[in-house]
Image (cartoon, rainbow, N blue to C red; front, side, top):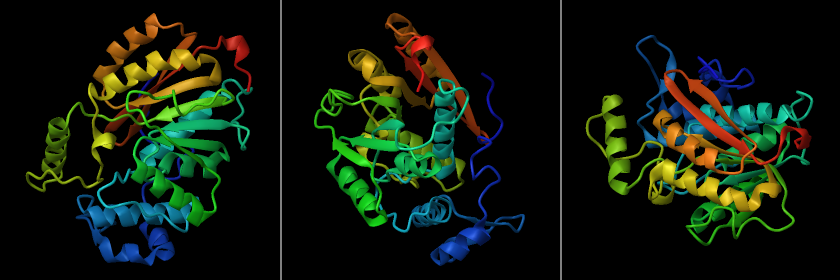
Length: 301
């Protein structure tokens, strides 16, 4: 599948940020805006506070969220790319629904590592009305996500994963059935690699050599043994025990080089079909892999 030159056609952020509209809904954003060399309104994306204000404004303006706060230093994800993942998942499910985008709470989605921001369930529920279950190993993240739900009156199920080695076991119940799982796995293999990546990002932003994270992030959000390959490899292996409880298992893959070893692992499993869906936001390329144990004749929603 060819790399998309820009965001998904249904992505509200495809044409960039409408700062005038955002500031009208969220006046606090005006305190951190600036002008770029072309005279356009923007923010300093190396400023942690500015990035958080932008996210709050986006979620209020486009997703009707009156409250969105996360603990200091926790991951504050860039919204447009997260939205793309949701829209491409909708396209994936449409393939089993007579090419119609499935909508409503009968569609069940499981977000592995939902985080303090709860960003995927918030976007997906607003865009398509799906029912989400968010899972995380970090109690602070679960508490933050629960507060966001309560303050906005949202029905999103939240479950704590107690075992760092397990992904589905312990949080999937025998009667659970999901149409899709989604996951943005820890990218780095160690704290040192996470720090190195942060410093490289700051140098690219022209801000010198700093280990500070402009998008934040706790250890479990940023790294795990084996990095994304290690995490997704465990996901693939453990998904076999829950093959009948989920139509499509999916995970973001940040590094293109990770696809080859993951494809080898998927080829060894009892999988009916594997897909790689390419995404792009400006110069940034990403993708997710999806696999199902159901033959095509049994995938009707």
